[in-house]
Length: 538
Image (cartoon, rainbow, N blue to C red; front, side, top):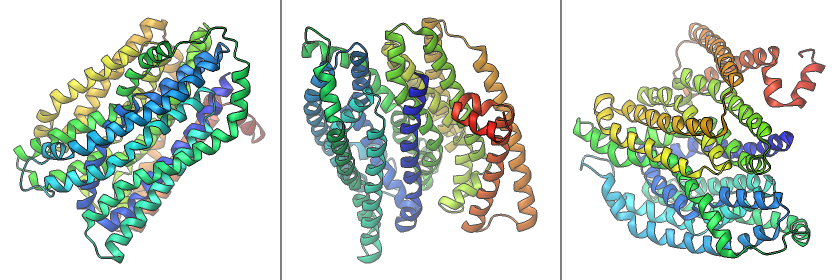
């Protein structure tokens, strides 16, 4: 059973990793085409879009995944198929409704963002890009429900591949369209931004095509299982939707967690910065926090997202069947792998922030500072995703809503005073405190409900912290040596060279120590153990 968890997690995580990497790589040429100023306009469209998308989807993928997994475990394959058939129609309706709502609300939302005439953009410019991105809401919701259905059968490949194809199509259209508008036809960068956000709709069509392919591939298997369904009486649709809604409402909040924190910044950052005389730079600084550095910081988080999505059906199965030992073991391993991967990643990003920002975007002391300070918050993003998934898996969804709202209120209360005190760093600190409150509530509920305490996790986290310290020291030493040999970073090439060498040394040191101590083998499975045994590293 644990191997199935790890296999499903690996497939989903690999797909999400590749998708996130592509989502970072395309920024380089896109940034070069439209410029730093217009990147800020691009990010203004995606925060309201993300929130409206989460509302339209209403937690459907993970809720459907949980429902299908639960009833499949009991031999009732018919109920999941009934949900799939009616759910797609409902998602099409909610998606179209969300599209209309966001399209009509574009101007009022833009009006909330503009706080000063000294800002770079106008209300109409921001409203225009919001309208263009809203078209993707027509397709994405029912595509997400389809992914959840596959995951309920422990088939993670359709989700992973469709996400990857969706991203590739979106990026090709985005870069191709932007290049044609700005370089070939000498159009305005603002027009290119509108085309770029519309690419989300085209990408979604590509992802939908992949899911259709997998549906045809697995349909005979699904039909065979449905014919063997053991349920003697069919569940009424009212009962099915009552259960799904119970699952899904908290997942609306999980899906919208990060965009909600970003929305608080979007609505308060400009006003707070303007009040201390920084109106001219507020759009640029906000885009650094909510888009440019966020793109880098979120890469370690996708590992946790992959785990949380793949974890829920398995955790539900353990909980439904009363396999509490397996449940606690899965929780232990999930926490450990999460910290094992994300802690060294965020420390490495912080140490190499100057080189990474220069390499990806341009030389910017402020951008590098924001990236260095923002990177550690990725651990909190990841922990929230996983603890929320665990609560979802044991039917304690209501606490997810409470914990997230508590964190948002803390963020809202602290954001303006902290920004006035610490400028851009204030928004980062307020986000960290807000997420910490949400995570603490989730962990306390899990401990009380499952009587879950693990000294093993504490010991392993301490060991991982020591290994990360060793890695950090090695990176700092190599960085200093490179500066003595080559001088300070002064070009994108030198930034790339510093990043590759320092990151390579860091990965080598951390990997060697974790393998030598047997930690990697214990966390990442038997296959790695066999490989290490052949190499003489047991």
